[in-house]
Length: 443
Length: 85
Image (cartoon, rainbow over the protein chains, first blue to last red):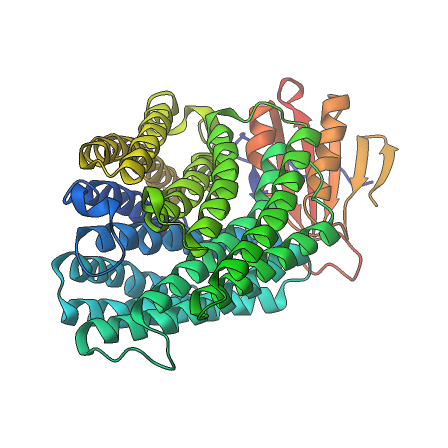
């Protein structure tokens, strides 16, 4: 056996010798998405306070509520999926991106496009919405092309890759519906083939919340949860079964949204399939956590566990809303629990661990010695404040929607904004640390 | 399935051909059991592992092969407990 190579000139962990290559992107590419997501999280909670009386009864139409919803879905959730997929899928699958330019181009289109679209929705400006919508869809197309190239060449991680394909199918459908909805707001083109604005908006929500973002959240979990817990990957067959059940649930939910007269049985069937599929997925994740070598995963995974509970609650509320239950402002309550509850809680929890982890990997890749993971981003203050603000904001806004009390929505929006500001602080600290470590590596 | 053998310079793990997270788990199991120097033979640089290795007080050097053949390791990673360096 050959001797280890001579001691490196810089004596710290992670010295890379002899042209070792990794699939890590330059830090500024994923971080621009994560920083934007943290900013939009503040915007989405703050917009709930603009017209809290409208939030509880929100069923569509332009204004602060629509802007808040899309600041969250496009600005936080999809933004995070884009940044995470570009970085994590390359590293986890070992497939290198052919060029960094498309990833940069996607960010140049998508980030300002989302800001324009959200502003247009808030101001009720159809030209801004149309412009923002076109630029957002272009950004998503560029990102999708990059992702398709990675998924197509990925040699393993089949469960995650399969979720990625289906998520992209959902994205294509929901984007097409979004374009029709924006067109209708300006030019009144609906109904088409009997589907009116409300039905298409509901289908758009299902495809976005459970389809595009929900499937990516499930798929990434099969990489991230075992990685953080240091546990074996869940059985692929069970992951596929969970995916199939969730897809069946989504298909039934779409049928319920678009049907005339069969809404109740279809919606309840969708909820049943969704509950079994999501329950199986959550069971696999809990099994991975239980089997993991790392047992203490901190506050972040408390949020993730809460998110899984909120996923099940969202499916039940969705089933009830689809079946025609309109007490407690059920459709709005469902949309809030799905987006701010399940998806935002999950992403907040995961990013709380991913951002320090990525920073550490970047530093090691450049031959730098980073701080300990737990010492990055003033986590004892920022992440605790974020979790407290986020959870209390969720409870108050959900209660405000259910009992139609704008004061509760206002208070919840304020607490959620404080939590989001704390998360922004955490993210800014992490980005600053990446910049310093990168600058040191250059010198 | 990983291959494990002991040489004059310590324990070796051949983790080529394994899909994530199996290589990471094999390394963690090994370093949880012993502080002895460890040499890893891998297809890909294990960058997911670095933050945890640092937290656990290990240091390492990475050697990349210029043109690894089929079935040969593209990276050899030499791991030591920090106090041993």
